[in-house]
Amino acid sequence: MIQDFPPELQQFASDNYAGVCPQAWAAMEAANSGHAAAYGDDFWTARAADALRNLFETHCEVFFVFNGTAANALALSALCQSYHSVICSSVAHVETDECGAPEFFSNGSKLLVAATEQGKLTPDSVRALATGRSDLHFPKARAVTITQATETGQVYSIDEIKSLSAVCRELGLRLHMDGARFANACAALGRPPAELTWKAGVDVLCFGGTKNGMAMGEAVLFFDPALAQDFAYRCKQAGQLASKMRYLAAPWVGMLESGAWLANAAHGNACARRLAAAIERVPGVAALFPVEANSVFLRAPPRVLEGLREKGWRFYSFIGGAGRFMFAWDADPARVDALAADIAELAEAKRE
Ligand SMILES: *Cc1c(COP(=O)(O)O)cnc(C)c1O
Image 1: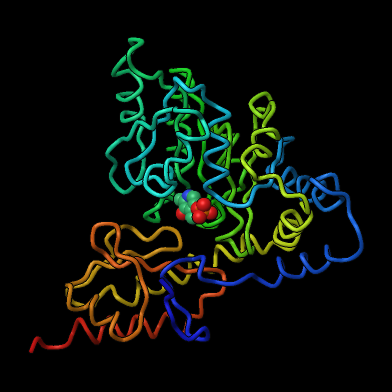
Image 2: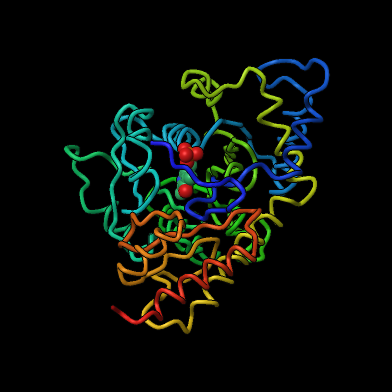
């Protein structure tokens, strides 16, 4: 279904409604000169991988894939055998939005879903699922996946990640992080990427480039190189090995070397806080979840949400009936204010 709206009017339905940020675009353009070796044996790919190792302050194994579903599914399949299971939250993207790709690419590893508050797994929920069954009639728990920032815009603190990884170590589980919005989490916490990942016990990170301002592309980082064994074959088999890899890699160079990755995320987060602050005193509406990253889930009476749609605003309402607004690298503060004004006007209008 084609959803038509004037391209000059920003919509906040998703952070991937936004285009490509100038730094990523300029790097694509710079990469688009002359010939380069194919399938990742080129200068741009080496430079992008080094920029990631530099940012994470460690010699991790780095792979570039087209999108987040592939990154997550392939990373999890590298951690599991077909008879294993992966613990995740009930609102995790791997569970709700990947069409069974993690199960498919792992040849059947089962997702074990924990009912979670605000999308965060806790050490207790991991322990309960991992130890609930130990007989061979049930798939053996092997990995835990957490989303940073979560699907509902919360951020795991470094201590929370550490306490999850401690349980993982104790129970022989590997810890995977879906970082489709990892940059937003870094901006929110104001801590270096290393502290949120390998220093806190994360084994594999899927670092999202698309929602951060690139045209496409996610980086899979293995902090334990042993886990990356044969991963290149998985990527190739899954149709995720770009032959003109320089175009997947170059935007990372632009994003990381300029610092745009963090500035973009900080801007998105600031716009979410701006909307949240603007509606704080509006009667009858509230943010359904704490606003810690770049999203606001607007809880409002149906007539307000319907009124917003009538005014032309686009948004999803797939979690808890709230309207989801996501802010990307280019979100225009004036447009955020216009949204806030429309919310206030509708909420304050007398019922007919
Ligand atoms: C957007 C997103 C992804 C990646 O989705 P793709 O459409 O496959 O790129 C993964 N995890 C989360 C939490 C996301 O929001």
